[in-house]
Image (cartoon, rainbow, N blue to C red; front, side, top):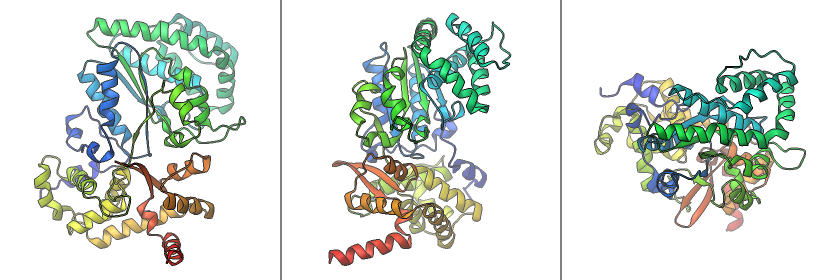
Length: 446
């Protein structure tokens, strides 16, 4: 048997993006650009390396949760490093409290991650403003934080944020203290940290500094007293401050913001006039519902590459029966995923937990049924009505309730030569509720 079961299981882990700087992980990578409506990562990279290598850029990147953004950003990191840029990639979910985050939190997180990354290559920069700020913060918060005056910037930021992560009350007090000083913090990060970092990196033969802030699209979508949602406040109202960093930055932002009435304002304030790059789903069906062969072919390859990374793509097709009882069973899994990468890996992972390959149709149907029930359970009647509207119009509005549809993966976004369109998650299309609505609609139409 050519299939290494343990390796296959690890490769199907839906929570682990591919580390594209790692040769072993790169074997699993499938390039979906041909069916996703454009070379999205190439455009981000080209902006930095070709068009504006010496002048800072701020680029926005978005897409559904689990559609493969992190893997693509890690690919961007690997390619920029090959071009001699120093890249700081970090997952904001590891550093920030996503339910309660402000601009100063994001700026401090970036400063901390940049200085930690520089310290790793023996570049130590200690902005004098921060040494003074930390002393004032500790006095103001009246909470014991063991911080030596000589401590690295990343250590100082790390200790203060760790302390506030434990206590929402402490976090609010710190924020009230830092908020009026945002301008000074930004100025210090730019002058004392980023400008000096760029100079020192260039002395080492690097072309510059790039910061990739992943998972910032997971900021809680909640209304604020002002009437705006938290993402609108951060990325639109305060967007100009986030784009003022003196290095190349790529931010992930919530997909729903691109449908907001304020999307033009987002494009101007945070994007500097440039619209966010969107990573859509991989289309496995066309707008009219027929199977879309180019997309399905690549999804098949994604599954088979996880099983047989060292075998050529054409030869893998001869090995389908090592993993499934038939090619139809593999296609069933690919089509029900709707072209959502993490969902497809999750279904595979679940099959592996049930039995050893080759998986029979019963096993696959059991896993699909579980996924269907799990996804359909939380949908309330109002949300079903919204889903039906999206199916009829093939579009999504920017209201906060539509955020839920996108965030909860009830509907998927696709792109083709005609532009953007939306469809219900195929797993929900098989529920009794959806089928009843469909039949009712057909009766009315006839």
